[in-house]
Image 1 (tube, rainbow, N blue to C red):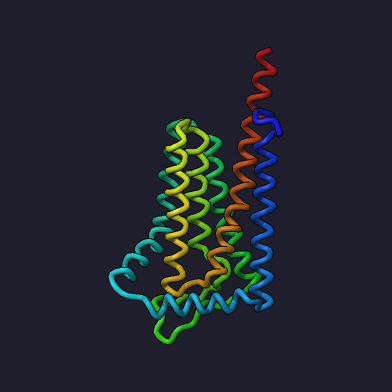
Image 2 (tube, rainbow, N blue to C red):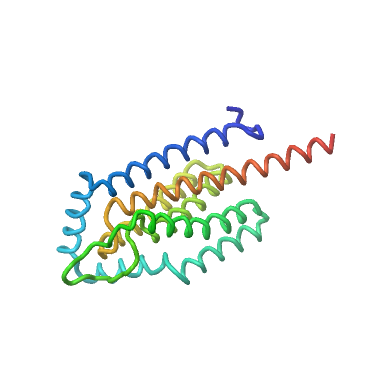
Length: 225
């Protein structure tokens, strides 16, 4: 529980967050596979969004969704990685460059493990052939914005700056999740599972990089003494 220890409070908090996120993901996956009550809610929410879709909101949701996939997402990650490199936040850069691609691989692996079909409508707003659970866009957004918020909370001393960073990041993740449900690409449980999956993945890598940094600093202090 020591805040400054090499294996201190940050490791305890990281393990606790990992356990909680994995428990949520496990419960959602079991509910989806077992066709539990949440699947009924999933269909109700999907039908409601499809019935109430209208322009220009549909165009805006397409834009939000597009910015968090493929080339735009890669450019966002590279831009943030370059920023971390410029300010010599090398451990944060490493966490970003490792967590992002491996998180995408993890998401695809879970999709093929669960093999949940996409929502089906007579006149769909989007047509995708891949599996639905969990949402890849939401998972990528959670990793990107979650890591950025974690960095700002760690380095900014002002409480209002920390709060703004958290609110902005949570807002962006929720907006991406909403866009995927609005467009009929995912169910509610898909985006919730994606958030839990990425929170767990972030907990692993941020905690690992923080532990590595603290260990290096401890070794340097020992050599100096």
